[in-house]
Image: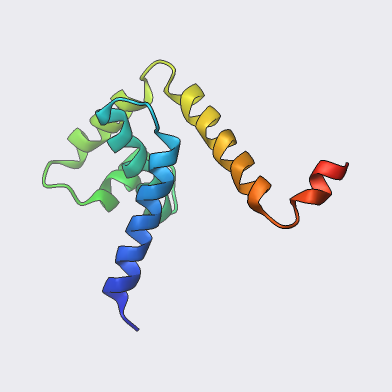
Length: 105
């Protein structure tokens, strides 16, 4: 099994999904969304310290956690991400062959 190829595909999927979530956001917010999506999946946790450790950055975990915390406090970020996610999900359901069941009810 080619693990490096699998890892590359996973990173591409995460980048594509987080790109959809962060459309129209500033560059630092786009990076934050990508790091959070990857970090939550890799750490299987929503705790910032655990997410920060999975990012394996060359700075202290305290500094990473502070940066993630600052981004979480960004005004309107949660609302914009939720809205983007709902649009993405709606688009996905419309492409699904079984979506006619939902439309019919």
